[in-house]
Length: 125
Image 1 (cartoon, one colour):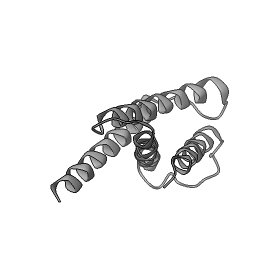
Image 2 (cartoon, rainbow, N blue to C red):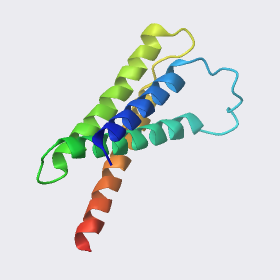
Image 3 (tube, rainbow, N blue to C red):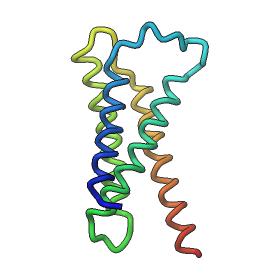
Image 4 (cartoon, helix red, strand yellow):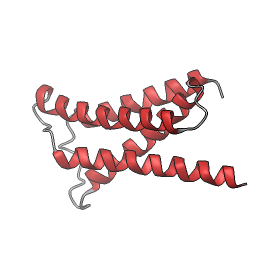
């Protein structure tokens, strides 16, 4: 698959995250589901980490996957922190939440663990 597709897919997903994290969602009746917001953050950053890994893996000539994994992880975490800062500074209906950052971090960690486990599985075969 061409690396441009990985790039645009990751960019699109980052846009989806930014959109849903910065728009007003007060009219969405989701309060009945406990911690749904945190699960959404985990999912968003799990997918972002995996998509970024696929892109960075195609763009680096690294012998192992460590460099693309680290870049993907750091990008996802810092992107999540940036979104939380943007919520606090640029919106009136959303506020930064340290637990959202922890959920973002958790999603990125899950993405890294999944990448490593899939990489180990393919090397064992």
